[in-house]
Length: 331
Ligand code: TRP
Image 1 (cartoon, rainbow, N blue to C red):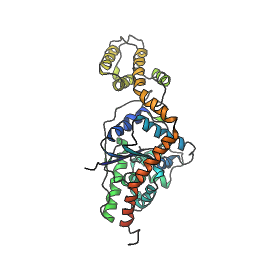
Image 2 (tube, rainbow, N blue to C red):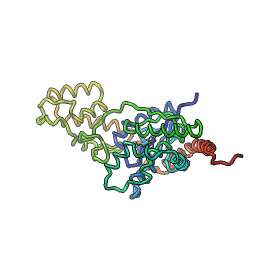
Image 3 (cartoon, rainbow, N blue to C red):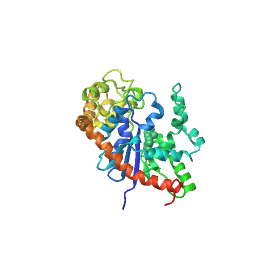
C-alpha cells in the first residue's frame, strides 16, 4: 500500500533551538519512517515579513538544513528542499490566489496578531496577506494528507482545507483536504521561564557548545522563593526541573525533586547535573552538525536532490490543475 503523504515547513530564521526541536523536528524524524514526507525550508514565507533585509537569507537556509540533518531527518527517507527551488509552488500559488477570498485572509487570527505585533514595520503588503494561501499551496502541491504542526498553525490549516474545498467545488475533485497532525508537544521554557523563543534571547540552540550550555543553564531561573541552599524548594515552578524531566533518567528526576523539596540539593549542583545530561543529549546532534558544516557542498546537493524529488510530484499536480482550469489547449 502507498504511504500517506505528509508535508511541513519552517521559515529560515537561523539556527534551531530546543523549542523548535521538541515542537516539531523530533516528531518529523519519527514520522519519516512511516509517511512519505516533504519538508520545506520556506524562504518565500520568510520574505513576507523580512523582505527588506535579505542579507542573511542564504546563511539562515543553510543553518536550518544543517540542524534538520543533524537532528536526524534522513534525505533517503524524506524530501528536504528549499521552497523557492520548486517554482511550481509559485505557479500554483498564483492560481489558488484567484479563488481565495480576501475576507478569509483578513479574518485570519495570525494575520491580525502579527500586524499588531510588528506594528511600525512595513508589512501591510499583498504577500504578507497571502501567507496562508502560500502555505496552503505548499501542502496541496503534494496532495498531502497530514501536516505535522503545532497548535498555532491550526488556523492556517483550516484555510488550506477551505481553499482545497473551493477548488474542488469549482473545478472538480483534485485536492484532499489536509488534516493537522497534532502531537503533544513537550513544554520546555526558555532560560528565563518564558516560552523559548529566538526573539526573547532565552533559547538554547541545538548547536550550542558544552560551555554555552553550562553558562546558559547557570543563568536559568529557579524557584524564586529559594534563597539559601537548604531552603525547601518547589520543583514544579522551576525551569531547571522542566528540563530535568526531559533530559534526565527517571530515577534521577525523582531523586532531584525529592532533594529539592527537602532542601538537600542546592540549585547550583542541580543545574550542573542537568547541564551534563543536556550536553550528553545534544552531543550526537552537535558532532553530526560539525561534520556537515565542513561539507557545505554535500548539504547543497541534498537540498537540490530534495527539490528534484519534490518537483517530480509538483509537476504532475500542476499538469492536472492547468488542465482542470482550461489553461491548456486540448490536444
Ligand atoms: N507557517 C508555518 C510556521 O510558521 C511554516 C510553514 C510554511 C508551513 N508552509 C508550511 C508549515 C506548510 C506546514 C506546512 O511554522
